[in-house]
Length: 544
Image (cartoon, rainbow, N blue to C red; front, side):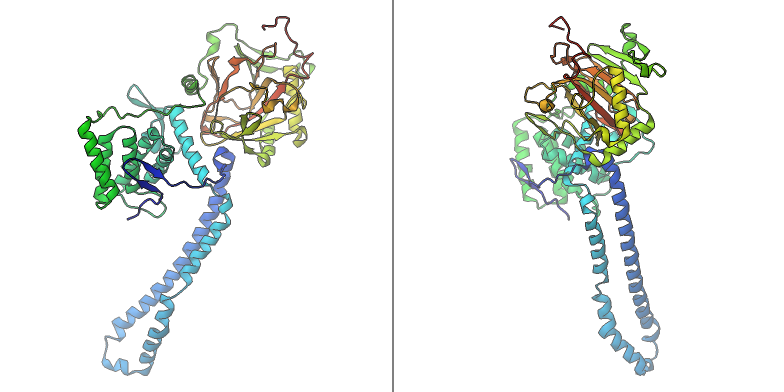
């Protein structure tokens, strides 16, 4: 029987061995995830070679077996005079002395296995790390929470939420990929190790159900077993206060491992606890979603993500409009841009078909080599954070001619000076598994912010370009303004981050919703205060 090697129970506390975390960042960019497909193709080829060599070896073993069996069936059971034949006697002695020895002690199987391992190790640097597995699992749980997805549906490869007691499709993929009991176990284990029993209970329950359905049999590629899932689930139920469920699961575990002293002690303790206090009702599992230290506007944020830009604001506010826009620039007279004013406070504008497909591809391809884990301001420095899951690259004008063309077009539309250092280099972002950026301001809110390193003031405006489309999720949500914008390939969004008096506009608090299905790419151009003195003037009203 196989047991988990990193979980140790005591009655009072379940402790998990601390495993050093590798700096895996594959999960933070879907580009890197796609690149992993080619790595697995190589592994498939290596495994096919191993199977071919092992098949040849086994064919040789079968041939030897058939040869010896035939001798015992046809020759040695015949007349006794057969053994008087010195040739027969010689071949028997030779076979027993050396042929059997060569077959039994053959190193061919070991050599085949070692060749497979060596091939695997050649690709090891390009394989996901532990942090990637954890990050991918956290991405699934993030999507579960933000889009209120039913875990039982996710396990079947469906994206559904329950509305009025019925599962409703949020998105129906062309191909459904169901999860195994081991898949669910690993997601639940990631939550469990973070003491997030809200998620661990839900995923481990599915794991146990699937393991039971498979007869509890362990297969070589699995990291967990039915016993492992039961072990984690029992303690998860205990930590949520559901003692009766913890007892029931522990008793089932004892059927598989009746001599497990730790589980026996836990059963005794659970039984004593139930004598002191009544069990929870079946409908009250005591599950409470963990609070977020970073996200104080979670409910509004998630509601806006779920609506995916379906607020239809123009029907509510007649001051919002669409037009063909030139900004009085001669360069746009013959080909004006389709402008859609989405909001007046804050002022947010959507420019349709701002970029061509070819330009978008140029920008993405140019950015590939420079993609690094996206960071956020942390005092005077910058650091990675779980509330921003993506990779970014910074492109200078010289990186590709398209970058300069976009800068010129942004300047024509906004009337602003976007040349460095008055505008930052173009930031290209690719989101990862459940990739998101929780509510934040683009402008600096602290005088020690890295934004001021350019010494050109704060970020007065943002120009964000959608370089790709997505199938579901990924909207841009303005929290206090209470609207969201779906991802629209080739479109761009512009808004002012600062009031005319230089103070930050709190209504620009915005977020990148988690990408449910799709590969989201955006490009950001941040424009600073300095260099705009005669292009975006201050108001005579200091309060404006």
